[in-house]
Length: 224
Image (cartoon, rainbow, N blue to C red):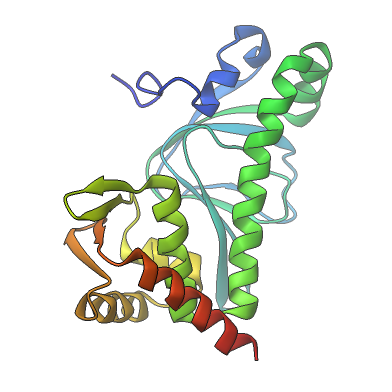
């Protein structure tokens, strides 16, 4: 069973189940590391991620700033002024922007759902930009865990289980720092009893109150 077959009711991809909306779109498979779009590119298309993950990032000289990761159900444009790179084998549905606009004019019921998906992506990008501007790395990491806990956390024994399909390098890219720094800060939080890592990508948050306090305190300190 494919990833798209397993989606739950209310999954954003359900907005695109109508064949009429997707007529004229074509399926494209990306290998790890392949670019789907870049600044100054001539392609002006809309794409819908079916499975996999795409990193949206800016690059200036020798530095890269990750804005967000796009996953199944996300919709985005190749004409955004950012680099779009598959970080794992990825499948997208690709169509010209003009084609999508013409279809939406005749299918107004799909517009609110698409706006919601785009709003979530924009909100995530703005949060990352705010963190880079006003928080130190420890504050960014604490806020990242706190936010992901609210979105994906579940009760597990006497703690909260958080399963992330992100490795340490992915988290470091989102926070604008190095993998070594993220590993060091996670180990420090583990020693302080805030969290523990049961296996790669799986964390048990034992003190969500301290996690939230850490993000707030670090944010204040870095903005003074």
